[in-house]
Amino acid sequence: MDAPSWISKYLEPHLQDARTVLSVGCGPGVFLRELAAIRPNAEFVGVDLSAERIHEAETRLRGVSNARVQIGDAQALPFESGSFDFVFCRFLLEYLPDKQRASRRWYESAVAVGRYCSRTWTDSWYGHSPEDPELQQTIERVANRLASTGFDPFVGRKLFNLCFEAGLAEIKVQIDPYHLYAGTIAEDQFDLWQTKLAIAKPQLEKVLGSDEAAVKYTDRFLGTCEGRTL
View 1 (tube, helix red, strand yellow):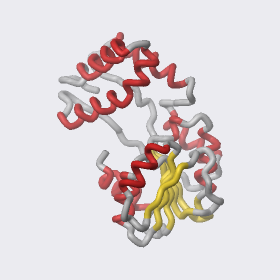
View 2 (tube, rainbow, N blue to C red):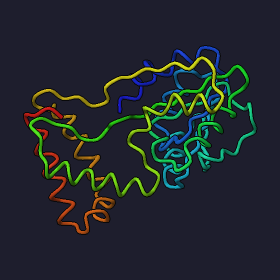
View 3 (cartoon, rainbow, N blue to C red):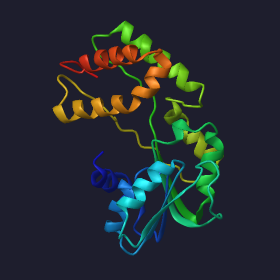
View 4 (cartoon, rainbow, N blue to C red):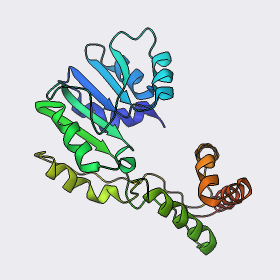
């Protein structure tokens, strides 16, 4: 992820008057470090459920005086209502079992005139031409297994209503393609997919039943990236 470009495109317009900013699901603190440098007069706080990710973030933010992180549940944030001028998350809501509760709690964490930004995906499953029926069936099998944990790959289309039900006003929606490759995929993007699938491999093994099946899936997936639309 190109953090500076993403921040410039999606976050900076909301940060002009923000003095306190909350990142929900902050991960290893990549965005927090960039934000802290861009807005030295603002205070940035990150929350993540993973102790390992929080440790990474603390290491990355060492020496940064206006950013800190702590362990916390995105569905039950450890802050009083109205604690922040701006609250944001990216690619998190789809993983949470109680999305309505999370959206409401995130909004409540912002002050009365504060702002909240949630970035997620919809219909983000693999589509390519020419089609590979066997690969598509495997992807759907993985998706069905993930659904049992509360994961929803179609949450993006529900985001407006989640925000509306949470009490937000002046809701704005922006839709952009996340990954679109026409023709041969660029080498850096191919490397990115290799990294993503390597991270996902333990879960693929659980769903598909073996290391061999996970490797086969990965090889077949990456093989379709060469000279095709993904």
